[in-house]
Image 1 (cartoon, rainbow, N blue to C red):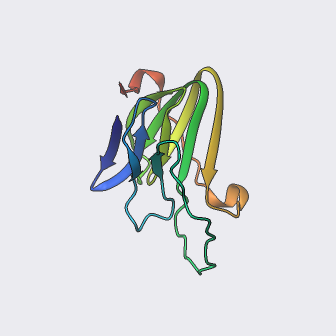
Image 2: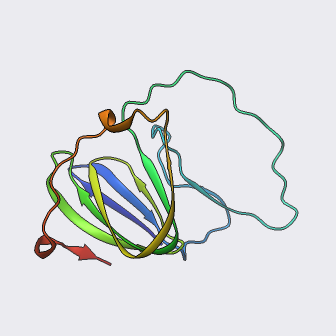
Length: 143
C-alpha cells in the first residue's frame, strides 16, 4: 500500500506501508526529485550487473528525507510550506516515508528505532526553520 499526501498541488509525503509488494523494480518518486525512492522484489538467481555511478554535478535546493521504521510507532505531523498544519499519520515497523516538501514534526508513540536518509552534507541548524507545533487537541490522525 502506498499513500501520497499532497497539498496545493505539491507532494508533501509518500508512505510505503510494510505490506507493499510488487514484482521487479518500482520507483515511487518522479525523476526530478533529488531523493529517489524505489522498491525491488527479485527472484532467486536474478543478477544485477556490477556498476558504479558517474560523478555528475547536481544542484539540490530542498532537503528531502526518508525514514525507515525498524521498530516501534511514530506519529508524523505534516505541515504545508507556509507552516500550517495539514494532518498526521502513524507509522509502524516496516513502514517507510519520504518527506518531500513542507514541514514535519514527530512524536514517538512506542519506543522507536528508525533510519533516516537524506542528502548531505548536513549543515546543522542553519538548514532548518523551526516553528511551533500544534496542540494535541488539533491533531487529525488519519490511518
